[in-house]
Length: 448
View 1: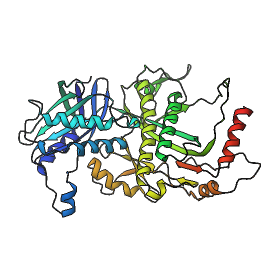
View 2: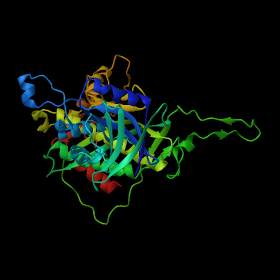
View 3: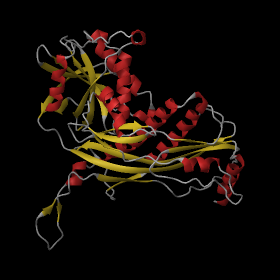
């Protein structure tokens, strides 16, 4: 595993200024592991913890004086929420700690419990892809001694290893990959299960989408690539055609590489026996996921393929979780045709580098609403100079309500629900479409 780490000088400036305001502080290290090296892009100080009792009483927030005061679950949840914002291929690599206490020699037991808590919470959600490795990076800075030291801790083997951490003027080159993934997925609810919670059905849908995604073929700028190749080969100089000048032509390095996902469309052979299922409803998920991922130039094509798929699934799962948490008790228990509109993804460029991270906005919210989460989770204070890309945009969903509740003509097998690739929707129809769906199932099974 990686034993070297590098980050640009703006990160050193950030961490050395923390002792001016805090005697003890902890935060997340964000970045990517590639070519046996930690490539660090951002430090995000964890907000100070205050329990509910002190909040209700209006007691002023007290800063920590010692590492023993750090709340494990608070830091772990910070890691979980921050991971939601990261594109595929980027992770919470570990923790930085600012204190004059000697916490690495020997390795402090509090660090072990913190890193174990982070590893546990990031591993609880299948599609968060939070744990790319059991080895976590720790960076300690002492404001008194003006020195820093780094080590790794393996939460599985409990081993501690030294790390050569360097801050440099200019870091490694990052390459951009963009993908627009279209989804139009219908999930039919068995009559006996149709009254179960919506969250259970959505999990099955996510599993199905992930399975389909993993079977897909990936093109880079409309071309197949060997999974063992390094991505910097995509930007190699290309020779001009024979008979022309001997000069070479550079691929524009700032131009994103287009990722295209080809999925199976051919019908499989019918089984020997056909089972007819009594359908109690359907859930249809329609829309487009905009994916933008960043990689160190020494990353392999195979690693990019895996990370792009993880980015799509991480984004879908995050939206579902946020939408589920926002539903009222009445909405959770509704048994009528309804349209659910989960939050959309916006991309924010980190101030000190070109890498973008994500935030998610509910209907009615705009790019200005990302400021609060950036300040709380990433410790980025905006002064109106944030670069926010609202690529997925908002749309009028009234047509979906009309389509999901309207009458179906007798010659139609299924309701004709219009699709809009700029939005991500749930269509939930229970009870009223039973006969239509049942006929539709028979049609597809027999007709094909």
